[in-house]
Image 1 (cartoon, rainbow, N blue to C red):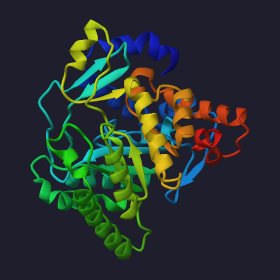
Image 2: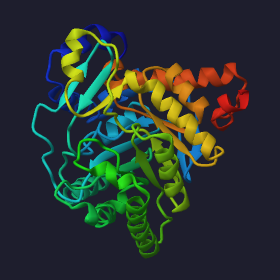
Image 3: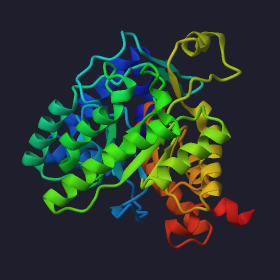
Length: 375
């Protein structure tokens, strides 16, 4: 939220419990967009002055920048993300069953390193309640003006062998509300979830979700919804290649790189060591380079023909530009909003537009993967 956020709000939020601060920020955003006057003020302050349109997965985006899953687990602030000028939004992760998640405290902030460590554990109301909430929102406000993605997770109580049914049930319940779905098999905070990234198990989940997609598409006379897979940054190159090939060969539309990591920075202050000693997934600035490198690897192994959504450590327009040049078509942030505030959207989108002009690109597609062509 610009200079005001840096001077006033950020220090205040820093002394609060991280999860409570997150919840209060969502409530404030929802309140601010609850009437036309304050909603217009939010847009005036934070909406980018430039548009960087792009079409991917058959969807039109005003710009390539959106919020990552975890920022709005319960779909509480849908109109808020629109008002901030984001290109798209992803809610969830949503599981088939309602669950409280892991015991608190479960979210920790390392301010100097601009990093978050969380072990939330897919806390969410469950797919049935989310369906009711989305139905209420759509009935009152209409369909969102920006694409709405839904992140699908596995319920903790569901055995691994029953995971395909769990994912498919959530997708079926929420199908008519989403513009795209994300299969999340890479969170480090649900026991053994990452085992579902192996070829056979991932294929079963994709096939189960594709079956729902086909059935709902035919029954409602609407086009198939894009299905993407969100992967872990902790896989080696062979595992990465296998996951990407499985997703691509089984009809997924793209890949999201990446989720949070179980690794930790090699250098940090003694005060922050307490944060990094916590179990859970780390996001934020420390994973910026590794996620950009992962995007580059995926782009190379697919010859730039499999769309990549880049997420991890985006704190500025320059960070976003690096991921686009590495091969990302779309971008997402989570920790960046925590540490930079709502003004991050304007910084990123206007920054991308400026970089395009400087490099002589008239469309974003021309910039995607440009680092490989420069090589």
